Length: 165
Ligand SMILES: [Zn+2]
Image (cartoon, rainbow, N blue to C red):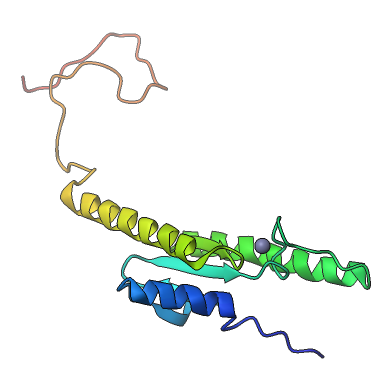
């Protein structure tokens, strides 16, 4: 069995170095899901952002993904399996509250870092907003407001006002 190494590919290293140069701190090889086990390349735990650097061949890049002629079926299965696992991972991590960003190995490191940086900024803004406003105002009764609470049910008797005015 041939061992295929997907860890510490040079593209990933270059992106990591670029992120580090910009003062961004992240974890490497962080387990973002234990069951099933999913380890992410670059993880920003505070912003809950997960970055995967996908190899063009192994993940079927639309630009550089090649389909070998020898053992075509074997390779297609292999790559398809990877891609299915990728989208499965995306779904699982999203459910767990992670934000997932995928970068192609062919992307220039500076561009990839730009995307990651932008995403981090957005997530920071989002988090700040969430803390600032509470969407559920508890105990706020709408006294005197006439109308339907839920559009589905319509009472024929006309609006009833509450006991207090
Ligand atoms: Zn590519």
